[in-house]
Each structure stands twice: as structure tokens, then as C-alpha cells.
Image (cartoon, rainbow, N blue to C red):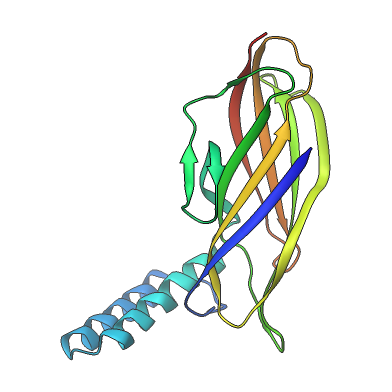
Length: 188
């Protein structure tokens, strides 16, 4: 059994250039100037441009990755205090990727990613992997900045011990790849 859900909230616009401290200071100064004039929308717009520049320049990574009992979208999850499973249990992982590409096209802002999953032992030996476990993406008229990924996998028959669940996202639009390693334990 495998599932993946992509959820999004919308805001901002993409600024496609490398980030330098001067760029950020300039945007912050403009934002402060707008704020002092009472133009809150313009101030927020400048700060959004700065955040977008950082997102475009950073590697694809995860702001958060944790086991959950339920997830209904970005930030809407119930964290699990469990990281010990048995064969046949379902592991549910909630993650928030950041740093993905999102070019603007004639159809809107586009996202295209695939997810690979693998299970490794603590020495790094790969015990099982599924490439292109899930594919997701699409278009939006507004930029999507708050994505969540909800991955569920059934625990295979593994001996008692410590393992790592690896989730690897591949962004076909930016060429970026990022992975998150989440430790878990099998108890018989």
C-alpha cells in the first residue's frame, strides 16, 4: 500500500536570482520604508520577494519531517509519538519540502516532483527501495509556498532493530534533489 498527498497554500511570487546579503538588506530597507509610510501591502510584498529569492537559491530540503497519525494538508496533522513499528504496520510520514522550483508558465506556476522511498539499516545498506513511488505537481495561478507531503508505507517483514526511512524528492523543473532520513525501530 502506498499513498502520497500534496497540499498547498498560496502566496507571493518567484524571483529567479541568486541571493546575496545586499539583495536581502535592500529588500528589508524597502519593506521598512513602506511600513513607515503605512503601506503594509507593499512592505509585505518586498519581504515576500526576499523570501522567494531565498527559496529559489536554497537546495531542495525539508523544513519538517515526522511520523503522524493523520494529516489533512499543510500544518494540519496529528504528530505521532511512536517511531517503533511491527511488520504489517503502516508508517505515515508528514513532510514539508522547501526550495523546490516553481517557474511561471502560460498555464500558471508549475510544480513537478517525484518521490522515492527506501529503507536502510543503520550501516547504510539499502534493504528496499521504490523509485518514483509517487509523482505530483500541477499548475496554479498563484505561487504555492506551503506544500506538504504525506507518505504511507506498509512495514515489510524486517528483523527487530533500528532502521532509516529515506524520502527523496526530485524536482524535474529545477533539477534539485533533496532527501530526508527519519529513523525508526522494528519491534517483534
